[in-house]
Length: 377
Image (spheres, rainbow, N blue to C red):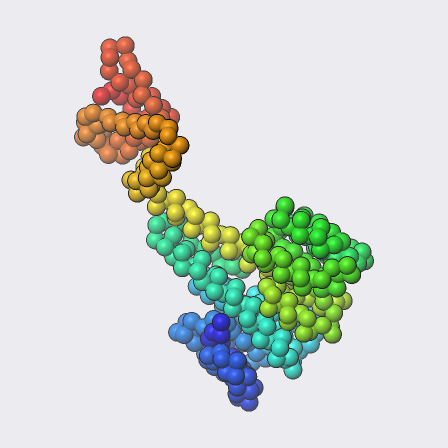
């Protein structure tokens, strides 16, 4: 899985240290010493992930991150910000700028590499959808906007937490976005609720008293209905290794207790925004498939679909020993309509729903939007 990492830091020893650590884990490392240089490297080299220092001259890390996320071409690029700043407000500011994580120096290697592996898996999935989306846009579909433009309100959230006080505090914090927040107190109830209701995000405690949260996480990822569901784990400050394991098992993000209200909101909004961006890519792809199999004028399936479907119908008919009928309709002399009234009118007439005979034996077109009253052939 190791990919291409861009390390951005204006202090050369920091760059060399990170480069050595990442290279030992078989990542390909690119480097930049300031914000403008980093944006140029991203444009030229297309890295898989950016490790970004906050305090830099010319352009700080917050602004670099905002520019990366505001560009539709790079909005899906994972960004991990690293800084000596330990204040929660700075962490929230980084996440609100679009960062996927905000790590405080000195960085714990196991947490950093687990985060990289998690984000790279997500990036690979996004790359597949974006590749399909490029085909969709060539077929006339609208290209997705930057991820930062997507709305995050009115989301369906599921909290799995057996501590009533912690659950109450999270529900109260999350209610500001006018979403639907449901809380369950056990892993089993959480899994059943997730498979039945398809929430936008699951927030799961790492310390469920009667359940193994990591085993529950594995269950989520093994089930088809919940495999791609975003999951935010909540743990304690001394559970770094366990949280790193959660990332390796498929968690999308984690949060430390005591939970800061603003950081919770920022991380939840990031996950919802990413999920809705992915859904937008998938919808565009599905619509492009529909366009590839239907006639844009009539809305009917085209020859490619017909031949494939008829083959299955014939095989099924032979298996079931049931008759199969095929009806073909043709409108004689339709060229007269195009020659007399123009192709635009002919296209509109082509969309009519049915034909009815006239008293004198001719055929009048009758249907919604027929542009020529009493048109006959």
